[in-house]
Amino acid sequence: MSLASMDMRDELNKLIEEKKLAFEEVPCLCGNESFSLIAEYDKFGIAQKTVICEKCGLIQSNPRMSDEALDWFYGSDFYGNLYGRIERKATTEFILSEAEGRPKKRYEFIKKYIDYGKVKSVLEIGCGGGWSLYQFFKDGKKVVGYDYGPALVEAGVKLGMDLRVGKIEDDPKEHGEYDVILMCHVFEHLPHPLKFMKKLETYLAPGGLIYIEVPHMKEVMMASLVNAHTYSFTKNTLLHYLDLAGFAPVAYWSDKNPIGSQAVLLKRTEDSYQIPSLEPEYERMKIVIEKSDAKWTRRQSYKKILKNLGLLRATSFFSHLKRKMQRGKSKA
Image: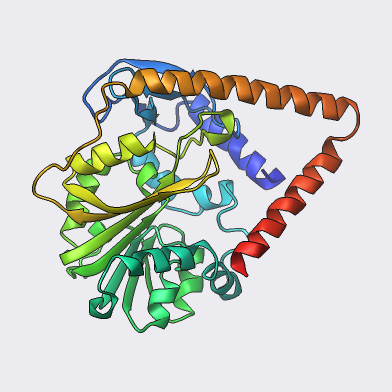
């Protein structure tokens, strides 16, 4: 976290402490109101409680910002600057470079499971600068994207893409139906994800597919807790609640990284498929959390030893270099 981001974190915590941002307690998506506390703060030190539902095992922020507070949080560049989402990214050069990484893999994954020649239009909610839309744009598809970040949207518009600031539901011009809809690391931020999926369905063309990518909670450590993530999904909870919203999986993938990503390609469904049962999920996740806590404690102890030996900077440097080399290989 940069010094500028740390200053914004402190500013946010002050607003929370002084109750200038409204928070509200809400029931879980399953209707349950009994939760176990996981953490008082997120990984950056932001005052946001993370809890787990004692009925279905869904991890979530609770109490959380009210809808009005969330509109402020996302409706300017505060959120983007807090997490470094905008820094050095609001340029056409970054968008073109980023489009060749993970977004290209998303594009290729989707093409495997749809009659691509019949795809005319692609919509993205939370498009950033349009890097996940760019491959479709190059193919001559109609692309439309919505994002809260004005700087990122402006950079994508310079490349010729139709990107718009704000929410799709607030755009009176938008009545179209799209063959593919993307939501990449957006679904976990939504305060009312099931209601939103019902709205999103009205923009999906007959036979169309929705691609949703979210963090994968294989482990539950401090490094995986982020205040902006209203919900944190395992594979079971993700597929369960998407089924309740009326969607069945066409294909699914996940990273090997324990704090990585997972994604599902969805189609409309009238009938429930073999929906994953969440009856044992809370007990299963309690074990995951205990193991993750132990692993996190060992990691912090290891860091403390390295720090005392004066080796922490060197270890961090080589870890950073290794990640950079791996990213370079993935783009090659």
